[in-house]
Image (cartoon, rainbow, N blue to C red):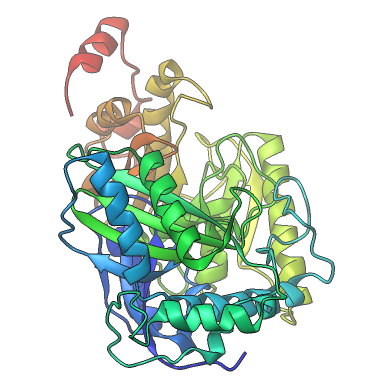
Length: 475
């Protein structure tokens, strides 16, 4: 396919709470200005199609789609029947041409990427406990499209067109090409609707079904909920409506981890936390509760002039981290790179780290929530001990910590006990697997460890009455 160079709008889902961080990366690496959607967890930015391949290498983005049309204030009708008729009319008026061009170009990019990563791709990617890299599979060859997109005339400032016979509309063009290539099977598709708002007379399923029927009638595609070639996205947030075509089959956050644990952190969330640290050249960065190594792996691959040290008290977790590192090293070696990673993995006691005092620049970790790992009761003792040991190894005055936890009350209590050693800079509220959690950015005070009451003695744990009172208190 001959690549075309024009400006298109790309939409992306990002970890909720890290929209601005993702926008910063887009500006830094693509020189494009991203805008944050009213609906949390999405950003939009304009690029020329020659940068499409670079978008897939951004570390903050989960899923990508090309925008067909945006409506800032879509006026929904009052009844389901009227809305259904609206969907039917809308499908015929949308400017599909450019978005389908981008979809086809994106398929060719993914196909080349898949050939580089593995010689014999399987039908479905198995991303758990395997040592081969996970890549998107292309469900059908783009060259077999019954719509010859290269024959479509792409006009500047193209407007919505109505399917009227006397006009040179998109429907006429697509119908003519379908007639010319009637021997080729039509595409399979599905419509996915994400809806937010309480003033709609329809559900997400209603919208997906009705708009899907309209798309099928317009293109004569075949509906298939599982083995689809094209996924049409219908994103509705109150009166904001965005129609798009998906450019990713599998979320980009699965790029590094092959050996998963019960609480493996999404790579995109790990990257967002690392950007909050602003790592500098020669910084020593420690993850004392690394689990399967998502945070240090992201850091070592993106900030190769810093040094990452990670560990866990669980031998199985350490083994998984080592296997994930081996997978990345094998992948980079197969890709022609002979350099290693500035990263070491150690099994240790996180409350008694085998490190010199005041030797670490940044501490970043995903602390146990007390849900799938540990318990909230144990956190009352663990959190103060962790903060104390982190303060010991962190450099006074310049050291930083970025800590993720959903156990906000326990963390706040621990911070009160360690108030002489840490100061809270700011908090980013995120969604982790449906749980409302906080990423707490802390700064190490200039107080030398060993000179305050907090670190001379072991931090006391909360008594049962204290726990009950703290549970009832708001942050």
